[in-house]
Image (cartoon, rainbow, N blue to C red; front, top):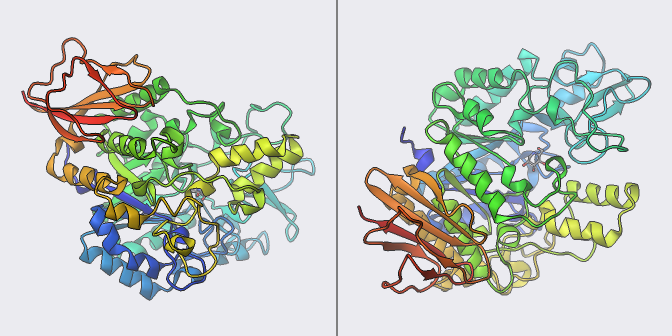
Length: 564
Ligand code: NOJ
């Protein structure tokens, strides 16, 4: 298998608005990140993925860009950004920027021009259509509720916005648009960045004719149109063109955010010869606790370990030698991992460590989302007025006003699934506002910060933070953690998720008790782990433990190295 630095790396995601405020305005900023570079170095991560910092009116916290070549006022200046990049590189940390080019803000100069008249040179930069029978051109639902079309008085046409109406979709069919995107990518790459995370990059090719979406929610006016805009007909062609024009001229980590991809799509996008990207984010495991994939935030159900095993194993095996996985359990759009997949109550520390063991022992590049390394949890604010996220607020009112849902039930969904769970300020210490700001934070801090914070974690040698640090160090020492082949064992066990990693004559045995019970692990027939040596675990262990009869403690994780 090809060896590359981005397979061997651990990526840390920063959501700048919530990371660290340096000037007391309540909003995280670039100088705040600069102040915390030593912290990141102590954790040992190799790469930072920085969520968008470009100029933006912030309808969707920076995912609505009005100038691709400048920094958002609240975050600082380009000079601050240059200093941040230099500070990272001095510490051996690489920087991956967020590339948001499925859409721009409606305040981007291209859109301001585009909406002026039908013959404006920028008209065709966006997707404009005349009304159909006096209504929207098709029945597509926006990701943030309501129609995906917005009527514009000036020219009497609608423009497409798969997200908010302030995020107009770019028309990738137009070669001029693609050339602009390649240009702005080069502009950042030539400043010395190390890659891009590409926002909803598999939505750029829409099916010509923009057909009506099939009705999956009978009775609803708008329907999810993913069938006609996810992995569309020219998707691979566009990515390959981007590769020829830009990516192939640099040594980069590129990760596509690609909702709705199958392993086959992912191989097409990431195959070393025929693909274009290093890896993609797939979402199947993010839907295990929902009734339906396309509206995972509008429903909740208990996820099952069998399903998690099935999904992860399929991705591990199908991409083996064909592509490369990115491994994550949370990010700025998801609930906190420990609250969703672990136990954020009695076994918060144990289960956070177990989940870390899981993500760092699968084959793929692990992503750590800010605060995950100290076991930050979901939050349950008492009122929808406490929530800032456009998606959560829109969903809440859609459910309450249009679907007649009980407000308490709608709030419970926001508590479980809302994106603000991940966006409460980073908890640095037990002082005022968790040490995030000296002012009023743009979103409330999670009230559990006096107990869960970085200062505490650094001081406690048994903390989740130090466990992550050890895992990251181990990855450097044991290439089997990166390149070893994954095989599931005990597929039918209800509580234990166990697997092996194999590289030449070396083997790792990973045993994870995904429960608060005490099940017994037993090596399956035909598998042995001679000279089993504990590489890492989240409890004290006894070297005489018998792997044929091992009672696990709640949320216990163990990784053994076997000698052949
Ligand atoms: C995915 C991003 O991660 C999310 O935060 C954003 O709202 C949408 N794409 C639209 O850019």
